[in-house]
Image (cartoon, rainbow, N blue to C red):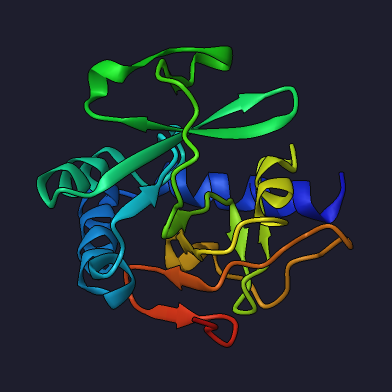
Length: 184
């Protein structure tokens, strides 16, 4: 088993054993909503969470409540496309039982992209699910990147490959970490 797979497995085991996961998710959501990054963003890209990820539906609800535009990714052969949704009715079960948008791809500029991941280091490098879809998207993305993580998902060093791109910020239940010099 390679190092990334071992890290994923360790983190998955930890998350499965968390007893207060919903409360920790709420702390992470509140920390996110308190950031100037959230407050200053009008268009937010967010994935629909999978079972071992921080719940993202409350983030989508808050964005709707605040009048923000919500973009959700869809995996296509050529990579990720982002689609504006106006409600959860704009979603359907797609590949691998993951909710996907039914709307057309958007060309709208995304201010803040919430990038999923399994394991992170303080430099912003992450281990994802292994498909490389976000790394390919981030090659041309010019907005702010932020990942949500349980503090237990932070490790000293994430093994990287040349195509891996770090996120700028990580928000956990305990802290907000600026990973890279923030360029505006």
